[in-house]
Structure formats: C-alpha cells, structure tokens
Image (cartoon, rainbow over all chains, first blue to last red; front, side, top):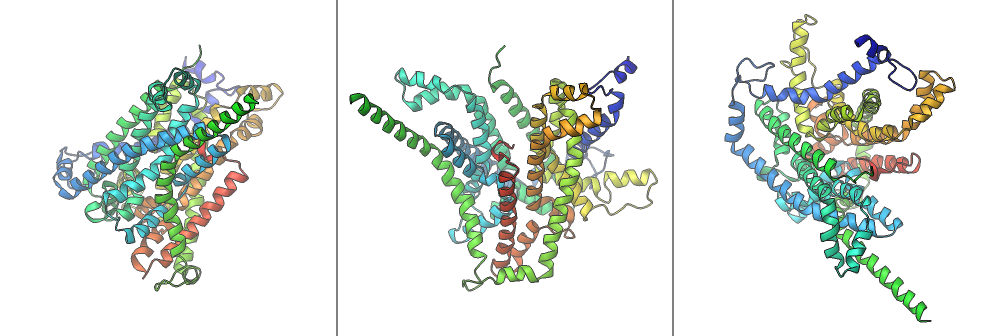
Length: 278
Length: 291
C-alpha cells in the first residue's frame, strides 16, 4: 500500500511521490521552523524554576502570577487593551465608508484613493514612528491615548479597507438600487441590504484592527513611553535586557489570543465568502 | 429638447452623487494624511534644519562622512539581501508544495503560515532568544549530542538576526505566491509534458515563469520590509548588527536636535520610494492586492 502510494505519479509530469520525498521533507521542516519556536514557549512558560528550560523539570504558574501581580505589566496591558478597542471602533466604520466610496466612484478616482489608503502599509513603521513622535512634541500628544489611537487607526485603515473592499466587490450593487427604488435612502439601503451581507468581512476586519493595534510595537516604541507605554513596548524594553520568564507567560497569553482571533477570522471568512454557483 | 434637459439634469445628479460618495473616503484619507503623510513630510522638513532652526544640508553631510552611519547602511542592505534570499529559498518550495495539495490538507498547512503571520513580532523575537540563548534548546541539544563541549554564542550576531527576520518574512512571500500558484492552469504543464518536456524543463520553462508575479510581489515586500525592520535586529543583533531603524532610534536619543535621525529617515524613505516606484512601473505590481 505504502509502496504503491510512493510510486504513484504525484504531478502532471509523472514524478512519483517517492521522487518528491525531498520536497515533502523540506516543506515539513519549513513548517516546523515557522510554527515550533513560538509554540515551544507555551509549555516552557509553566516552569517552576527561575529560568526557562525545555522540558521544564517542575511546573507552576509563578510567571503568570508574576505578570498579573506587576502593576507595570498590568498598566501596559490596560493601555494596549484601550488603544486596541478604540482603534477597532474607529478604524472599522472609517474603513467601511472608504471601501464603499472607492467602489462607487469611477475607476481612475478609485485607483487614486486606493493608492492613498495603502500608503501606511507601504511606509516603514520606523519612519512613521519618528515622524509622529517629532510632530507630537509641539502638539503635546506623545504618551497620550489619543495620539496613540490616531496613529494606530491610520496604520490599520489599509488592512480594514482592503478586506472590506474585496468582499464588497463580489456584492451585487443592483440590490441597493432596488431598495432605493422602493423608497429607501441610500444610507438605509446600505444598512438594510448590503451591510448584513458583508457583515462577516466587516467583523473580520474589526478583529484584524484590534489584533494589529494590540501587537503594534514600533510606532508605540516612539510615541508611547512612561505611563502611556503599551504592552509591546514594555516587552521590547524587557527583551533588550535578556530572557525574562514573565515574557514567556505574556507571550503564551498573546498567542492564545492570536490563535482565537485567527480562528474567528478564518471561520467568519469562510462563512462570509460569495456563494458559489453549483 | 425636454429629453436633453432631462439628460443634463441626470448627468448633474450623477456627478453630485459621485462627489458625495467620494466624501465617504475623506475621513479615512484625513486620518492617514494627519498621522502618516504629515509626519513623513515633517521628517523631511526637519532633516534640512540645524539645531537653531536654519536651513542646512549638514545633517546629510554627517550621514555621508561619519563611518558609523555608512556601515549601518551597508549592514542594512546586506542583512536585507540575505533575508530576502533565504526567505525565497525556504518559501518558494514550501508554497510550491502547498499549492498542489488537496484543498482540505492545504488549508491545514496554510495555518502554519497564517499563525506566525498573525503572531506578534515581539513574541516571535522572544522565541528565538529562548531558542538561541546560552541555556536555550539549540545549545542544550548541541551539548547533549556531543557536538560541542560548552554552549556556543548563537545570539547577537548576523546569523541570529537573519534567522529571526526570515521567520517573519516567509509568510509575506508565501501569501501572495500561494494565490498566484493556485491560479496556474495545470493544463499548460500537461501540454508541456505531452510535447516531450521533462519534469525539470516543465518546471523551469512553464511553471516558474507563471509563478513570477507572486514571487516578485513577495520578494519585493520582503526586501522593503527588511530595510526598515526595527525590533528583531535590535534584539537579536544585540547592538552588534545595527540596521537603519535602530540607528534612527539611537540618533533620536543621542544627538542634539533631530537632524541626523531625520536625515537617516529620509534615506530610508528614498530607498522605499524608489523600490516602490520600480515595483509598480517595471514589475507592474498591484500592491493593493498584496496581503
């Protein structure tokens, strides 16, 4: 059975599975390289020792308790949670509105707007970081939640807009015209007809905005210091002084959050895609 | 006559309607303008001012004459190039296989790319610190296997920096490449095979050229992202591999005034803009469709 599988052709050019074993092995190693390093952190974070080891010789929750007991880590987490929530709440409606605008206007204008909205995605975060920092100095916006959220909304807008736009493109705009011809205003037609149909893409975009802001460490490195420091910024500072096992606990929690959000986005996306014709 | 007037009214209505719809994109554009475009222009402006606020090109002179800054630029280009090459060597064969798997299996394997893609860069950098540290798993294994007697210094060098960055960049290549490869019509491969091309010739003369749009988009994204990368080289390079992002952060903290930091920033901006222009004009990349 195995032999028959190995000698069966695997490609259009009649290469057998046996002939591609090297490719399978290479791809498996590459996937291990991509996934294993971060996943290994999770068991290690439960060590009872004062340093990280694999596998841990004793198990405890001491590093999770250390994280929750530290006012600095708690404050940083709260700053990040607030910033991520506000970023999500602001970037999602702005992104949906922009996507709708891009879709309705004529092609050339749409391309120009699309290019302008992608700018934050193309520019190095370090450059945006020092720019915001230097601009915020005279404005007094450094280390404030407002300044941080403004930066994060701008950074997440391309992702939110492009995700929603991709979904809207497969939506039939004539449905809205029908609603309008029956007496709906354009806004009501959008809210009652289009929005329910693209809601999964909108939720996915909102989750993406949340996670992006929660994990963003470069711009916040420059503009969020002192009491305004975000969780990624504190982690970054701590990493420069060596391996603190508390970070293993925080990383594990962050990974669980990421896995949940990615799973949610995947499920939402697969349910929200355009209906395929049978 | 009435019809003409009617048509004119309709056309005007349609124009107004479009203008109003354009307004929907304005808030988003305003936020991006205020928090991205204006700050970058501000950096440009500050880069030509001296400490007293007079016009000067001295900051760029410092950049060109101080050996430290030149070596930072060389290091940045070297590391970015290495990261790009290694990422392609790992990412292309991986994506090539994933794109040929049955959809259900491919979805599971794609999680191996999506998960790291969505995981915080800080978490991933920390993971490599833990793996490559003196008491890390890699050193423990090496000693246990008897390959070395004492733990090796694996951190704080170019290798560690490149490994950490490749881990971040492979998904950036794999995502656009996967989309391109999935769209390749395998009828071309069968046609090539039926006309007598061997597997190697079919791959290089048919499959590879068809995968080029995704490959060039991914390669470009990796190189540009690497140029401005900050967190991973700062931590894993440990001060011994200084890339431009870290140099900008250091310059903000050390020099009087912001001249040198902003001049470095303008250098990074110029490199990014030139590459971006090249990608859109010559490679005809549609960056709006990149992930």
